[in-house]
Image (cartoon, rainbow, N blue to C red; front, side, top):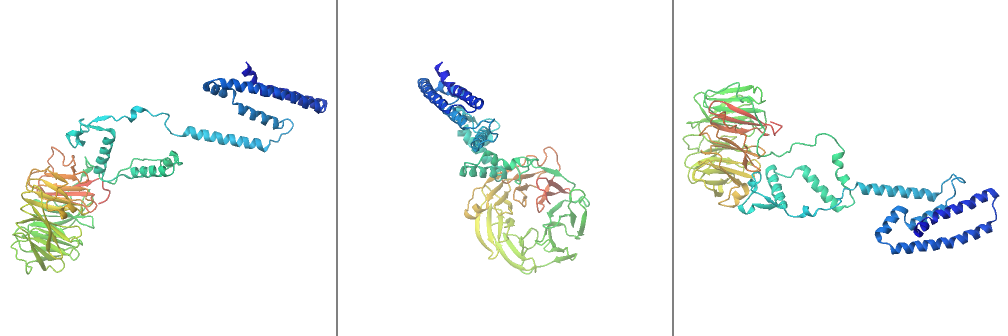
Length: 544
């Protein structure tokens, strides 16, 4: 009870002080000396009650003192309120508030704002100790067993599994997506400036509305978004097999050629594919045809002919090249055009490779390998030539000096059949007679004589006859013309095969004689033995 009476001490003092003020107003300011004596007599009594109250608080526990402070207020706050009430003029006598009161109110508003900010903070209320325990994840589950590298990884912690999933994602997608990079930058920024709030980090997301799920620029693995179009040569189907299909490098045009002794050009739109032009080469079944690097000429060779044709598309002329001085070959069939448009590489017998000037059609020089040359390919810049031999070795030639600068063994290859170099210069693919395609890192091939392949693709069971990288170096098309529908598309970043091409149980492709991608990978075409240039739309790529 003494504590309660002490708590009511300020209120009683205010009531006692209110009565003298009323008497002064009524009596016209009474005797000031009597009033001062009476107030002086009340002050020692208040100090005694306050001291007794503090003594009682000292004897109580901290919990009891905290509860009383919440209910009745703090003692210091009570004293401050009493001093404020004593020094503040009455509202009845003066309607103007003092500057101290305005400052008090502004301080209170700032305190309220700080309280609101504290309540809006997203700090956790508690930390569960069970969350910090390392839980072992069963990797033998059918959804996770493909990520096991050895039998020792039957159990993995959450952190290791998370790192494994991140590695798998980057291997499949090729790089870290932009939204993940942005979040990592925000985390770094937050560590540098701890005063930045989480609301600032989410400002980019909260300032706009719409669809936040966008497609990634990198090609995903697993299934390929592909649609079948009308054949590219729908307006002139051939009765004999097609041996060549190739897209023009700068125009929306595709070329087909075959045993029917003709070379045809079509405009590619995926709907009607109208024919542009067709030339007939009498008595000349076309073995292979290619555009020149500038796209103004078409070079065509035959099965058993020493001569070859050059079709000038700008002038509309067909120019036969009957004989080249210095070229001692019985037949001219397989050839490659350099990317810079300088040379024509003709594969001869007994391992010979001949360079012909594209401008003058004159003989430049020869190179020879051990064994028989089965396939050749230029590097993207045209400075080197890669030649696959029948003995399973790959020779690297310098074009200017025509010297062999390096040679390496294709791992596990008994007889090489074809070779291709990616347009970004990072990969080399080698095909063999056993159906295995080895994909190498380009730098490893130039450093070692027995490089290890990044992946040995074993999805074909017959001899590999065609290899083709798409312009972005994300897809490798492999094919064999020995059996029907022996075509596979390989996702290069993950080195896995797309599961939805070709469609299982439906014979559509038949024997694939030639393959090519459009300049920006929007279309993919396969020339088959039925005289059709099958055309597919790769929907991941928006342009031709």
